Each structure stands twice: as structure tokens, then as C-alpha cells.
Image (tube, rainbow over all chains, first blue to last red; front, side, top):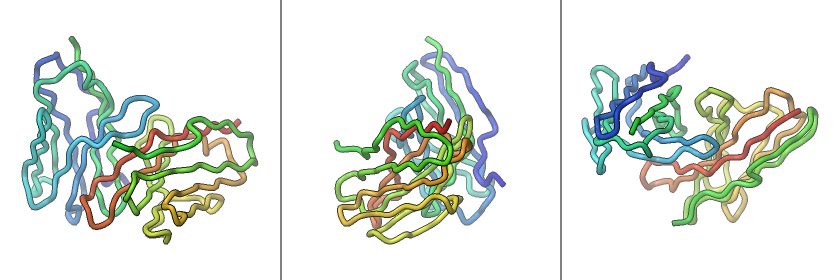
Length: 109
Length: 113
């Protein structure tokens, strides 16, 4: 039973454009979400987080939006760079992290 | 800045052998988490420790055990290894009472043959 879902396995964007990665969750009690970036053979790297008391959090090129009524969050990367190519996981923190399946982002030069 | 350290980075074992994975959290972090990531899968929570006490338990097989020591490092002990135990094992750490981010180590790749 996947409580955090990333329904797009992959996304390809052109360098300089916006990347939008989506994530849905099923449990309305979830109140803290994180995005991680992962390269092959490395551990997940924390990118940005958001609490359910907010609907937006921004850090440089990364912005996370949270829509609680839709149980949906998204990560926007603007502008996208080739170095952003990686697998992106969203996760809910309930004390432990519950991950989505991941989305592989490819940014083409 | 210091990160989470895991050792070994790679481990090859045969079926029915035992393995011990070690994790050294970020300094001043008091909580350690273990996750398992199978091929093509998302990381799955195994177990966590806060101040040397088990704080939560996930889908960890009975063949596995773990503990956190007085210096806050943690060890994951895996016995009677099976082929299906082949995976990446990640350790993460955080500071309870601080932000709710967990910071991951580079992982240990366990291959069971």
C-alpha cells in the first residue's frame, strides 16, 4: 500500500526550463514532507522540506508547493541544469520517512 | 560539514553468512535510522534509535538486529543471509527536537551470493 506516490517514473526537460516533479499522498495526517535527490551509488541528499502549516517553501532554484486539500505536493526547479539530472524522491516524515517511488529527471543541455 | 559515515561501502557475503553494517551519525545527532533499498525500489524503513533506545521498527526481518552505542554510532547485524537481502542499506541521522530532516550516508551495497 503506497502511501506516498510519484506517478511519473521519468521526466525530461531542456536546460534552462522549469522542471516540475509531482507527488501525492493518501494520509491526511501527514504533516511534513521532504524532497531528496539521489545519484546512483550515493545516499539521498536532502533538498527542501515543507510543513503542512505552509503551502510554499522556496530555497534558491527549488520551490515546493503543498496542496493539502488535494493531498498533493510538487517540486519546481527553475532554471533546470544538467547537474540536476538524478532520481528525485518525495517523502513524508512520520518519525520515519515514507518514500515515493521516485522520478528520474533528465535535464538535456 | 561532517556527514553520515557508513562502513563498509561494499560487502559480498554468501547465503547463510552474517554481516555487520556500521553507521556513524553527524556529530550532535542523537537519532539514527536504517533503510533498505532494493533494486528499482524506494528506500524502506527498517528501524530507528534515539538515545540508544529503539524508537521505531519497520519491516525488519527477525534475522536482523541493530543497536545504538554510547557514542551514538549504530550497527545493523544481519544473520542467515538470503539472496533477497541483496540491497543498498542506508543509514540516516537527525537531531530530535531539531528540524525534521534526516541526513543520509552514502550507503552500504550488500551482495549475497
